[in-house]
Length: 400
Image (cartoon, rainbow, N blue to C red; front, top):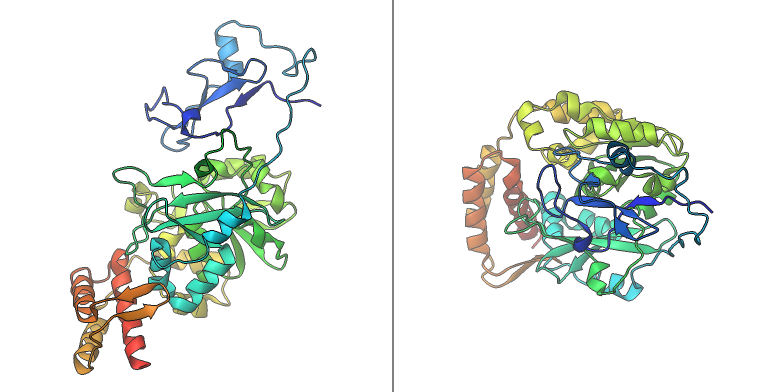
């Protein structure tokens, strides 16, 4: 059995990630490890995980060559026992099930409710096994479940309930379920987020970077099975094994096209990857500066109209229309209709349970705040949650 002598250090917590010697960002640098000595080769020999903004990579072969050191003819040490292949570990089922019991405080679920309403949100929770975590109040767990039903790990993230944006201040709120188990060592082997859905062989597969984008895109473009790599650099051969012989479409974030095009060529032995150029060629320049992804465009549209209008269209035509449509929304007429309606009905004075995940204690104040925000931010998709909540309150009152 052969194995590589020099490998990028496996992730075992943030202590295994270091400061990049190029961009000077902390906890972004992965060092190369000598598996025979279990020592790092040199503090500069490694790869920065900021693939777009830095892309520093100093491999062992280059280091040995530049320092006139002899690289062994074979990276396999015949005098020692081969490096033992570690058995993949999984998250205990009871921890997974506990995360699915309640989503009342889950900020990401609250955002989905504002976009899609209760029925679709419940379906997405069940489809992707969206979990909730108490690690941070309102946090979400995106479980990585492989196609055999094993739970590899869960990415825990915190979002803003009104905009669906990640909370990055005063620090980036991201951690992992396996690190919270407090085990000295956890033999992790990640899989694609949503891999368990790939058992459906009737649809093409679409892969994006973020879990959030995969979930949202599955509503707008249900003709695909939507999966997520988890980040730009996580589209790997190991993860893509589950896609063997499938038709796969990659939708990289803005500025990431070249990186994923290169990966598609590297992984062509697994299957054929079609890399979408739509956002790269059609998006406005100022969007590129913010690294927009597919979801940033889709949420500009009402999902019901989008699905209806584009049901018979090829996916690239549909998304192209969204990406190039920079005309701002105008909510004024609808705001006036909503305002007239709320002034014409008697509002409940007690606590109102709008849906299984949203409880309103002062309905009048909630309506006034949302109306004021919608007027002030007219057409701004980042504040579309206000309009969604107002529409849902109206439907709630009309239904008695």
